[in-house]
Amino acid sequence: IELEWWITQIKNNKPRNIETHKTQATITTDASLGRWGAFLLITGKDIYMISKPWKAKILTSNKREIITILFALNYFWPVLLHNHLRYLKVKTDNTTACYNLTKGEAKVGLRRIIDQFLLYIEYQQWEVKFRHIPGTNNTEADSLSRLAVSGDYSIDKQMLQQVLEE
Image (cartoon, rainbow, N blue to C red; front, side):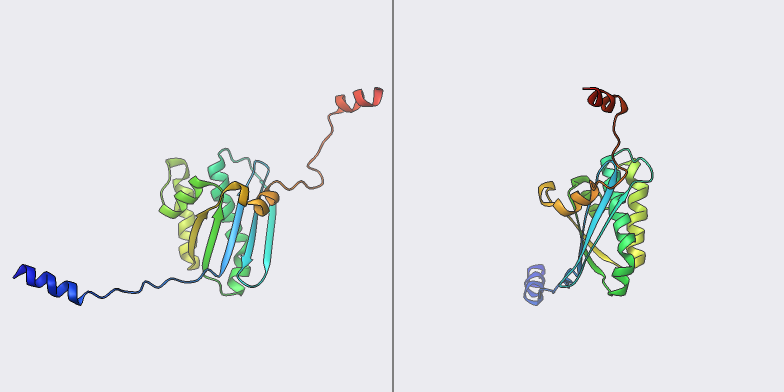
C-alpha cells in the first residue's frame, strides 16, 4: 500500500517553475584604503559612477567592501527608484563580503553591519544577487576607488630641498 502511494505521488509530481527575474541593473564596487568607488549599469541604458574618499578610517578590508556596497546602493537609490529597478546584481572582488551578504552570516565584528544592510535591502524591496568577480576584472570600480584627485599629493619638504640643492 505504501509503495502504491509513492508511485501515485511520483506520477502526480509536476515540476514547478521557479520565477526568476532578469537583472535590471548591475552595481560593481571596490574599496581601497583612501576611497571607495562604484559603477551602476542599467541594462540597456545608462552608466553612473561615484568615487568618494572615506570620512573615517575603516580598519578591515572586508568591512570597507561591505560598507562600499551599502554606500553605493544608498548613493544610487534615487536612480534605482526613478527607473523602478528592483532586480539588482552587485559585483565585488571581495570573496568574504560576497559570501557574508549572500549567506547573511558574518563574524561578530561584521554581524551588525550585515544585519542592517539586509534590512535596508528588504525595506527597499530589492532583490539583490551578490557575485564575486576576480580583481583583475574589476577595473572600472578599482580605478574609481584609487582615483587621485587634486589635494591627494604632497611633496616631502626635505626631499624637495635636496633636489633643489643638486
